[in-house]
Length: 455
Image (cartoon, rainbow, N blue to C red; front, side, top):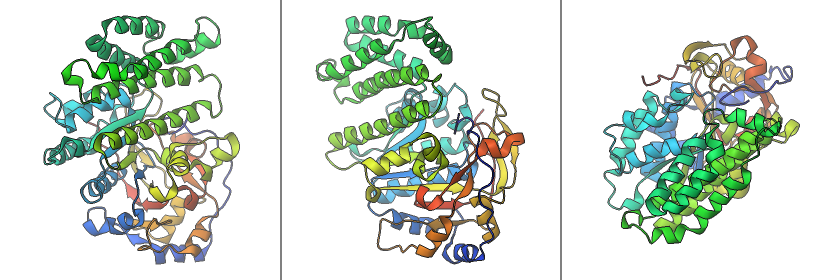
């Protein structure tokens, strides 16, 4: 598995850089980056132009500087560019509690409480000090907004919450349609017997021990979509539609998660593509819902791993297995001129990760990047932190064509998810990529430190 898990085996090093010209171009084109200065982000914001979807990545799920820098860029996009949606690589049902908190609809007394629904491994991915601080900042920002429609919302895009999402659908229906709630309990019943054993469900379906529940979860989603207007005419406290939208998306999570888990025995790119397709469709639904509600364009910041937000077509995965990702789908369907993605790299440091799936998090020393990698190339050019603009949506920012050409010679790129397998560093965490085709900008932080989880 990738990203939150393990990358597949990569080939041997394909390129060891000795190109002094490329090193000199990096030195010439780099924008020094301190991360705490207001001026650091000005070139990046200019390069984004009139972007509707800004995708900001991370090279690991456990690096403080990636999370902190991403949060600071997002604050600027909200304050200066009118971005009103944040969509993250987190489960829809769990993240929605944060949305209620930042939109002043929650009984939670703090951001730490609002992060309380993250109980499933890896909890530190969202229950950490950086996200806690950002959530408090966002609530403070929303408290100054005069119109509720202009508040900034915080959503999850992922599909792993099959059981909790089914619970949320039933909870909603019990408030508006008790008969339909009983039907939902029956349709979701077989799935519920596999609670916390999603992969056992996949195995039993594959071995024909139990029938697939595909028909039932699709029927439940169709019911929620068809009955929407009728439910909105029910209890007055549901009239704004947010709770209906939340319930409808939960029904979609159950439908897509069932398909995802059912296909885990297929291998290849099937489940990866299903997951990223679901995340893109959720993002698209969020943009449409809020544009209709606000009567004006919505703009979203997407937080996810580099392997999701970088264009998959620039990596070995697309060439060998036909994988796509949300970064590619955004570029294809929303358009390059209305989207922008930012990747991160690091040479060495420390990282929060687990040695095996499900294990407690610990702090690892990150092995210095291999010599055939972009990370090593950037470190060799300069040991300072910097940003490179590789594409611009604005005429205010010029891009050096020779830099793009020289960086387009494929290197490997390091990707660490929630596991760090030090003894299989190359096969687990490196993939051949073409960086200028993958990202519009890259921020290199030479030495990074481990993300601090909340207790």
